[in-house]
Length: 342
Image (cartoon, rainbow, N blue to C red; front, top):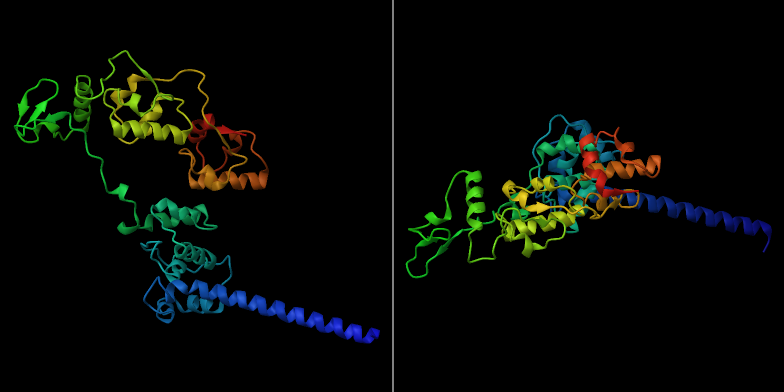
């Protein structure tokens, strides 16, 4: 084969590769735009894309039809309430989200993802803190998407016992009987209910005996069975104490029990912390954003700030390096300090 033939062959191969690259790029652009409009033309809305575009300003609709820039967001005149589980792509664009963020939300939903709480929206791909803070007040999660635990209130313990023969309630402390449900201590004051619960549980002979004043249990070692021997602590709070301690990595202060919702403060005097207990620490230089945010003292925004700092400045050597970041207050850094490793 002559050199001229070889050159013509190579030239033909180059032309074919260039045409294939142009075709591939064009196909990706078309697929991306089609994915963006999926929510408006598919399962997210019964309206057509043409009808939805008519609700946008003329310049915004034109920009959308031509394909807006990845970093560019739609002009927003005013914000409005929306549910990220049902909003279509055009609604998300009108809220100021970029084309890729709207596409990411729709793709997440098609894969079975659900936004159960407002804070879940902070996980949207490349959503900045400013965008989240601007949209958060307008996020409304539909009842059908929220967990059942948000609507079910655990029943209050009944410290009286039912007499199977008379249908009356007997006071476990005095043995006196009252008709109906009077023994359930229907009192409007939460504090009074807790005081009655604490006092009566000391004399509860039908359940596991309660410890007396002056006796304490070790907060980091006791299991739920031991927790229930503390006056004022039943199965509900025993599990809450143990579970929260596991999420923290261990308690470093008795006052951390106040972080459990509606915890009976009178019961704190029955707990102690033994010196030398080693809490479980999280390595802020190795864990991912999602892993960091699992700790009760690290929010999604703070986990993202830590990961971004590592990428730009290198590994952390002390939490004081984060004191200038707007996501952290001095109090939050001090609270987190016992639980981090470098």
